[in-house]
Image (cartoon, rainbow, N blue to C red; front, side):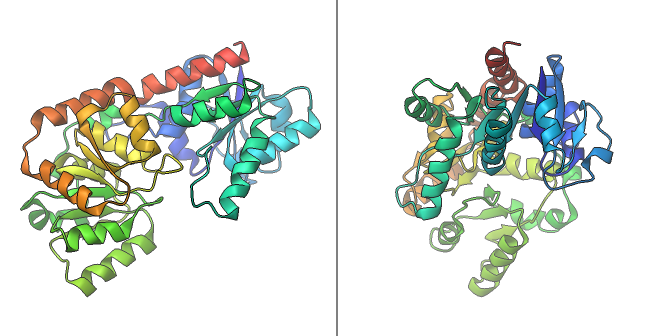
Length: 372
């Protein structure tokens, strides 16, 4: 089988997914949609829709790299394509016009349902997603809840694949040392380590006002690890204005060894994430569990899926936006030395979330629809 994937971001991140490293984890999307397929003997190519120079880069393990102007060639030369969201919708339209009797696009989406307070943009996204899905070779969704909703809507006319987004569990469980830690974290390590702290990483749909309330009104200590500069700047401004030094720490864009160190020493992961309508916060939640760190998370699609997979008492779920309930649950973790809970979290991650297992299951589901 020849498979085409959209390689967003740096090609180096995709190439590194083919090898185990002590310095960085294999990333979920590159590994699951390229390296795992190559390991089964399939030929994988990549396309970048925003870079005309892509074909000149070293293809490495890929059969070939396509630039943004080579879509027509890519459509003809590959058997299946795994494309996400808006890119997938445009590709399905093109596929339908050019090869109406040969559906090639597996349409992957982070969303299926519509939020309760949906505005016109969310409604438009929902309508276009469902229309595109009816013309796809298959629909790929991240959670069982979304997949069951798609099965009902599509009435068996299009295969629906479940894609559990695994993580490199072995990397996060490996014991972290101070030598792994970046200088900006080392400078504050003594202050950080004097009392238990909680951790919130990532940016998408994070509820940062709730984080401030938990620190300011409930006297919890929090490490915030954003990727976006504007989020880090907002937190630093609030720390100065509200005099939260020593209680709220911001470390921007830390490397993976440092992130692992911070996870492993946290009392718990604090999941202040809006996953009411899409599985936001999934990767970070999985990374925390793989690090042996239990989690307290707002109710949503993400928590229902992680519970379905068997997380058990490693994940404590509280009502969405109930800050007092979040504070109460976090304080329970902060007061207990949970050695067994940490071991359970890591074991669950290794058995249910490791990307070698989840990717293998996904490859097999694609092989079934392709007849490979």
